[in-house]
Length: 236
Length: 236
DNA sequence: AAATCGGCAAGTGTATGCAGTTTGTGCCGA
DNA sequence: TCGGCACAAACTGCATACACTTGCCGATTT
Image 1 (cartoon, rainbow over the protein chains, first blue to last red):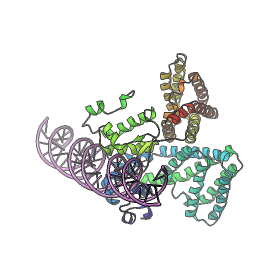
Image 2: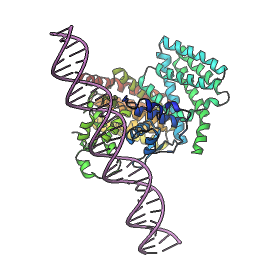
Image 3: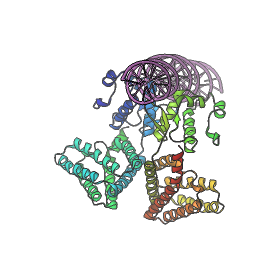
Image 4: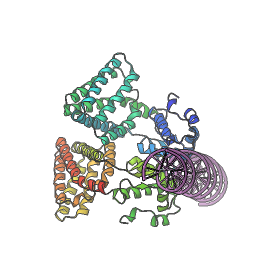
């Protein structure tokens, strides 16, 4: 409902009914993962192949492929002969994922401090400084976009494609549990200040400081998100 | 040929032709990934759906699902409408994967030093000491098995399921490039000594030392494997 | 009355056919 | 002789049909 843009059912399908861009499954994957990530579908909820096929006006074949990919992404859990459900993550596993995220970002920050080009450093600083205005105006949605961008820069700046992959993968799996964290009182300002420490260390070329700052940042995010995780776990 | 155990074509299929254990695709995935990992299939080689279907005596549908999963694992590269090929990794990407592996193992080692139970520490030390005999006898195959086991202990001992997943995933993607590294002169002894440093640091509870030792170990493995990677790249 | 077995319904796993895309090859023109 | 265009073969993407598995409900038996 709130994310119709990614729902391929009428609009997109109507237009490109016969365009074989090979993206039908891709669209379903992003549509379904959006529904999971945004919390429209709760952990444990069944993902029925025929229902999904009807919903997206396709046959079961692409649905199965989409479910397969979502399973590989860790967003859904496939049991042989028993269907697929939205993945249920235990509190322990969730903590482990946040911990991993902290370590991955710490590594990225360290590499960023060592390897970022001048252009990348400048771009990161400019964007970071610009974001301070979003904080002042309390524009949570806009800041969330910037935040994604900032972390993406962190992953890319490490100049290590595989670590970047691991970070993006882990981040996407954590997405369902990070939402709405910026609604917490003052989280916006704190987030920006934590970023500030990371940026300063990177610009100074101090790998260890950047490493530590990034780890601290994610640890705090983890604690801030734990509240929501518990809520969801209880309801599901 | 050398790995018929994992090839489901005649033997396995003949027996369980009608057993629907939901594992047909699983078998294909492990069979194909074995063929890739062991080097039977070279990077860039085409994975034709119909050929694979004939080879494993199944229809194209499960083949497609298997390819999909292998694509998610990063072992094959799927191009829309243009088939699938065994993934080609550039030297830069390969270096990035080894670098990531080094960092992941460093993290695991640090966590191991902090979190391993007494039982785990004792088991690791006993196995490690036992392996010294394999070194003395130059039993390369046996040592390679032990080596896998050792690293698996490292990942599990970190008590962080997600980091363990990331490490195993990265390790499997590196497998094609690590094979035969123990054939290098004296690599066996050096490997054991590097392990020794890691074990000593973990048992001493010295996280940072374990971290550094593990990172150094993988860096050396990376360099030792680079030779083979080049060879294979040239041939393919 | 409780437990077990048989049948039924729902849903997944696999096979096959058709439509559309890509790519290689041969022909035509310059 | 070389470049562009068109056609055809091969292959992928999706749809549909069928086979098998699983879980549930009720009837029968102990």
